[in-house]
Length: 312
Image (cartoon, rainbow, N blue to C red; front, side):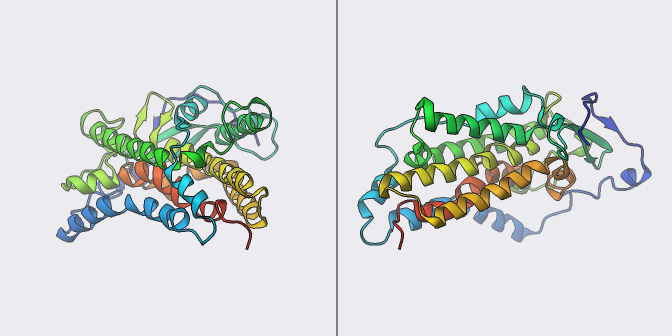
């Protein structure tokens, strides 16, 4: 059944089970000394993995495609700026969902999340499928008719975009940390462990928000990275077409199967509100950086492995 719009203000549950969970749910337990070492290694080494994955796939190619791979790795032959985050913010907060009005079985519009440890039930605007459709229709219209930018733009600027994604990931994680200390959305849902690095990595606030609708956790989990996933695949397929004059069956298969996964996520976005990501995880570097960098750069290694290589 299609969702109906309801008032946006969160309300508080008085259930006794919620009260009993106070102080126990979340990451409020003391951390052992070895945790600091593990956190340091994670913050230092994990950001290197996307770069290493790219170098393995593109900078060290099979014999015969070295020249194309070197140009791709440089990513600066025709420097361009391509930003998806700002448009996704606008599609998230400024365009209420209409897909649920005409797609049978799809649940969109304003939906309630799970009860938080403090007893709050937040409301969310479920419009991810709409945002994905608009983004990709504009992308395809540009590739076919408008020619505002080449469809290979993501591939051509992959490393500069990696720098931008890292800056965004660390910026949003740091802002979430400061916000949790100074002006949390709901102080009763904050968890402090006494370990600064653990708080930074795993998060303090349960549901950091700006205003009534911009929810950090839902937006970064379910907008820029996962919407970009299929755009990245299309851009790498376009690069393969440019380099070799055709798109291989394996590239088509990766695009189709991963698009099915992404569309399944957006079709079930209302259900996602009741999963572990929303119901248990606090928002810190683990989600902020992970959604901006880890998801789009590691989950797309299959297409980067194929873009510069002709069919074997």
